[in-house]
Image 1 (cartoon, one colour):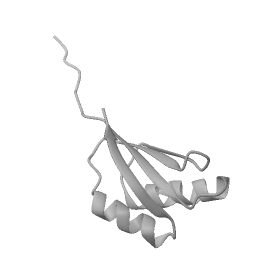
Image 2 (cartoon, helix red, strand yellow):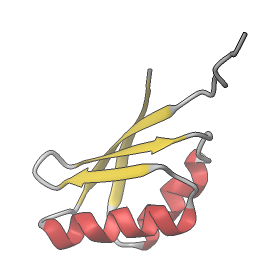
Image 3 (cartoon, helix red, strand yellow):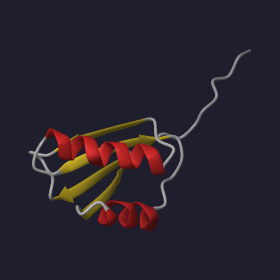
Image 4 (cartoon, helix red, strand yellow):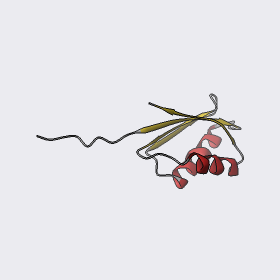
Length: 81
């Protein structure tokens, strides 16, 4: 009998102030991809949010630091099921 390898998938919803356009979205997406091992990142400047999918937990303090260094403000982090 075969068993699927069950791994936890993490979905983080980030509130980010300061994004004004598609280039801002790309900047946030790129820095998160560079600094963290993630599967997918998608930002939306109109909603002021970024969705991050990862197989591993993300260090919230490191994430907050990385985003603040870009000039944007991380206002909220929600780990969704």
